[in-house]
Length: 51
Image 1 (spheres, one colour):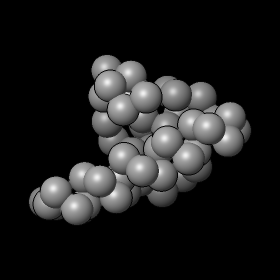
Image 2: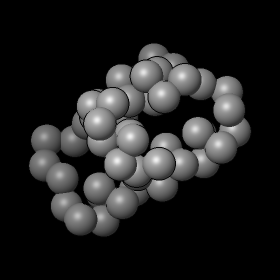
Image 3: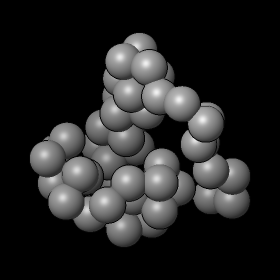
Image 4: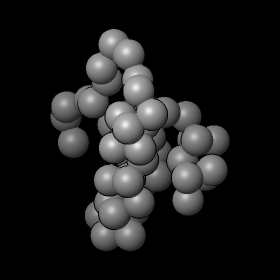
């Protein structure tokens, strides 16, 4: 995972667009929560909240 998804401004739909793939990637069990947090530019606390 090399690219980061970080637009300059986040709208509510963009925030949801960022959250939903996290859940699918987490369920696929191919990446650690830390890797996903770094890729999406969020904290570990955010990933725990989403999960």
